[in-house]
Structure formats: structure tokens, C-alpha cells
Length: 176
Image (tube, rainbow, N blue to C red):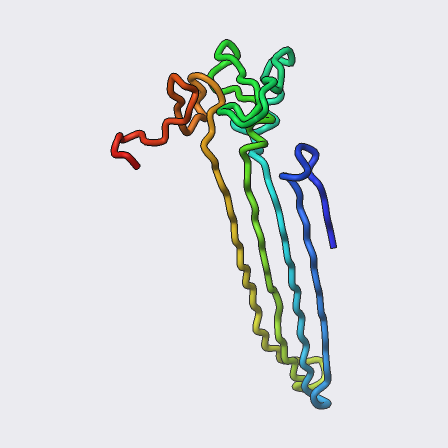
């Protein structure tokens, strides 16, 4: 069993692995032996954006430390309580805590690896072996991206706001 919390935002960045291993052998006759091996791994992982541009760490390192993290609101508005980082710092720099708040990534893995092996002792110092190996993994990844507005002209915005500071979700004006 292995469990590790992420350094940044451990509630949204963690890794949990459980492993079971079985290695069995039995002599069926004096000349035939059956060997089996089974490895089961269960992984549960949550992640935040990581690795280069677009990562939480990239934004944290490139944002001005003088920019406040929170905007003083109750968190129900468009900003969700996080301050916008001005375009003077670049249109690609976001508030890293706002990005973490909008991140929902889960991965679950169930993996089976193993073999079944028959060993036949033909004569002294000569054995014939046949093996059946298998490897199966069921991987389920889930990601959710809510409406996100990180400030005026930010490249990561997936929605715009109107003059009343409300999300514009009907971008093709068809009423939906």
C-alpha cells in the first residue's frame, strides 16, 4: 500500500496505490510443475495542471507576489472570490489558487498482470516450458471543467462576462 498527498493542494492532488501479489507453484507429477503469478494493482489519483505552461506551479512562479490572492467577495460571483491577475503581468498568467479551485481531475486504474506456466522435465538438465502471460488494465479518467473566467483578456477563459458581470453562456444567440 502506498499513499501520498500532493505538495500543492493535497485535497486535489494525491496518489493512492494498493498492490496484491501472489506467486504459487505446485508439482502436478514428478515431471510436471504448474507455476502461477498474479499481480493486481489498484490506483486512485487526483491531479492539478502540472508540467510547464499552464501548470499551477508555472502560474505561481510567474505571478507577482504583490497581487492579492482573494478579492474580498463572498465567492458567489464570477471571480468566485479570487483576485484577477492584471494583463500587465501577461494574458497567460492566472491566479494559481483560482486554477486549483477550478480543477477536477480523477483517474482510477485496475490492473491485472500474470502468468500461468507449465514446466515439463523431459530428461535430466532438459526442461520444456510453456507460458501464458496476460496484462489487462481498466483505466477511467474523469475531468470536469466548470465555466471559468480568470480576468479580462486571459487566454484560459472559456466564457465571457457581460456588462452586469454575469456569464455569457448563449454564445450563438439561439436561446440555449
